[in-house]
Amino acid sequence: MHFIDRISISSGTVWEDKVGYSRAVRVGNVIEVSGTTAVENDVVLGEGSVYDQSCFIFSKIEKALSEAGADLHHVVRTRAYITDISRWIEYANAHALFFGKIKPATSLVEVSNLIQPDLLIEIEATAIIPG
Image (cartoon, rainbow, N blue to C red; front, top):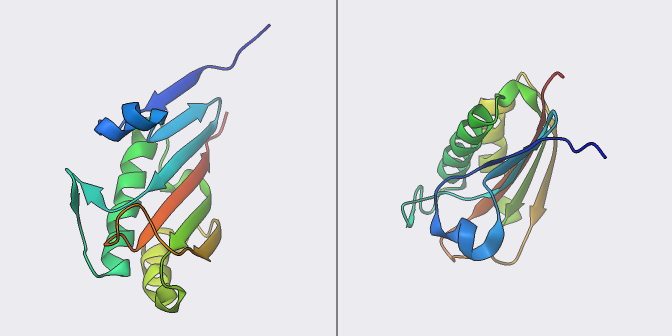
């Protein structure tokens, strides 16, 4: 039996081992980036701003993709979970800043809560690299 190589990308947080997940996983030419929030060293960045949190998250996603051998141009889908859909334009503006020319498929879904009350949005990404 032939198995495709699996590469796990870690961000180094204690939660990865506690929960049992990776920041990103590459299998073959597909990279899945886990739900990502605007937390760095246990501090929420961009508190109160969906736009600032989204920009920080996209930067974290870009870093994970780079470690997996990809970049934002390889992203084919983004998924976002926002706690207040009326603030969608803030997310849209951040998404356009990072993906305006790439134009991946995307979804934006309102959720009642994220893991911390000051987190306003969580974003996932899927990338496919030539192979």
